[in-house]
Length: 369
Ligand code: UD1
Image 1 (cartoon, rainbow, N blue to C red):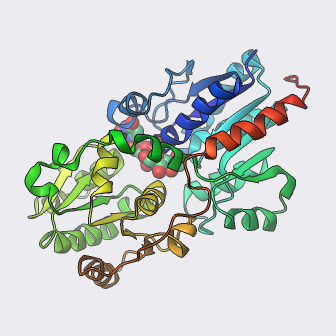
Image 2 (image 1 turned 90 degrees about the vertical axis):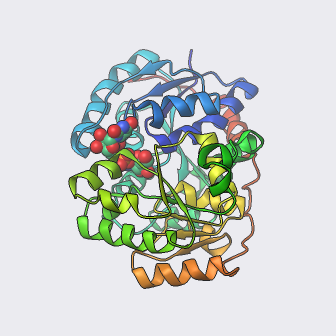
């Protein structure tokens, strides 16, 4: 009998599930891994399983790409029979991708408990698909594990019973601690010359990359920074497609810009660790740079991860050229935030989760409808 079915689907899920599955083995909780197949390219997927030592998925739903509705519906359609077959006590979902809400919805309709790791984060920007996924997943979750204290206030405001909410810290930082000694040195990715002093850029959010003018503006701004400091740019498939569609390829050839394929976890960690500056619209990278003490400029107008700003090294700069250039110059001139490590970002979040779940499973009688 499986106690818990763990769900992953997209790249940012993989680093969150790795320590959870390890902690389950250590605690004697039986778990199976379901991969929805939302991300499927080797570079977005297999490389992470290899880097992070995640067990091969027990079940792969192989949904692939599609519009939000098609992708979400297809995951639900394929996940329902799996859940009926497996009859776990609970499913565990992480983060905020389409796979998270799709599987949570199927489970809650079948009366199977939903555990949400990284609950309660809010950008208060409902134009982000991830914000919709977060709000809805939290509403139908039975146990909610949060990474920072602010998340508890967000959940309370939405009427979620505080007894179901547990502040355990950040499982993604567990992964970072565990893998730091194995990070691929930046010189192996960039060459010794560039590795002496460089910045890193990642872009993939629809609001930044789907609109031609916004994307062109950001690439032009980064090219200005790259004239002084070489910038490594691992390119997400959505962004590559959008650059090609918009005829913006010339910006990728500007002096100082080094385009890379999507990197594996250990190569990306090595790159971030020694960067002088990271520019990003990712959620996870805001947290990883805070844990590494590396200055981060977030190219968005908000963040769902306020601890990275209030305590860490993150600054929200939006997409305005002047604001980005001023903040970047400040960092490169030795300014920027020193930051401190937020509470419980100590590498033991997954162990705390396993301990709580062990007790919860103990006191429970379950059956799939
Ligand atoms: C998804 C998540 C986002 C996360 C991001 C990280 C949702 C709503 N969004 O966005 O929260 O930060 O992943 O990567 O779930 N593609 C490939 N190969 C792949 C995966 C995707 O070529 O392995 C292409 C798809 O064809 C698609 C595009 O990339 O056109 C976007 O993929 P999708 O899964 O829809 O969302 P992401 O933008 O990756």
